[in-house]
Image (tube, rainbow, N blue to C red; front, side):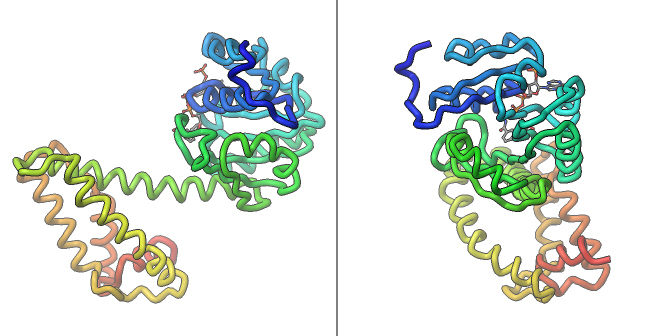
Length: 301
Ligand SMILES: NC(=O)c1ccc[n+]([C@@H]2O[C@H](COP(=O)([O-])OP(=O)(O)OC[C@H]3O[C@@H](n4cnc5c(N)ncnc54)[C@H](OP(=O)(O)O)[C@@H]3O)[C@@H](O)[C@H]2O)c1
């Protein structure tokens, strides 16, 4: 290990990290770079090589890894993998468990109960909102839920990963917000895929990159300013199409998108679920409402 690669920290901590996929490796590298004392475990041990080369200790079992530190970070594929890894553990006394594995709020609450049942002093959940390449950079954000005092006690570690935001004492809160924010990403990518397919398939004097830089990005900036108004309408349950974009009109617009894709011979169309939802809203007499009315449709019985 070369100490040149390490930045001195005033409070070097012992950390056990289980799960060395793309995210686990990125977190491990960030912790090592800051001089923390890292013990790691992974189902496929060979993946630990880059961290071991930088000074991490490879444990041969989850229990040996957990025994090495009071702070245990889980960064696995999904909740069922987390359960698999914790299954052989008998005792988590005096451990703070930080689970960064994505799941649902119910998964997280059940995992919190499970971990506390093994004596852990606290359970925190974290939702890392950036991909591996951005972990630890100043713009990186992680949402945390669980006991605030426990989060504050590991601030040296969380600050290493980037900005930290505590979003509630309920352990499921970060997961709920994670899924809400990823909904935006899913919807955005769905529309972006459709738009690049339309532009790429057509013979236009503008390519996908110009389309994106010159037209999509400014459009999104404009939309971003519109979102708080829609959210305000949802809050007050006043669903009128205040800027004039009624659901009835949007249904026609979606039909035009679908037919354009068909005319260009796309193998499939995106946005089908949105089209179906707006069609149902219009059939229920909500054609004069704006997009906020769809939230009413989803949430009101
Ligand atoms: N990648 C991203 O952009 C990103 C961003 C934010 C959050 N996340 C979340 O971060 C988590 C990890 O993502 P990732 O990109 O690191 O995934 P990944 O590269 O696929 O790594 C998955 C990790 O889980 C382990 N694993 C899977 N099933 C297991 C099992 N049954 N028992 C033990 N270990 C098991 C894998 O072990 P092996 O190496 O042995 O397969 C590996 O260490 C996910 O919950 C993901 O949703 C990802």
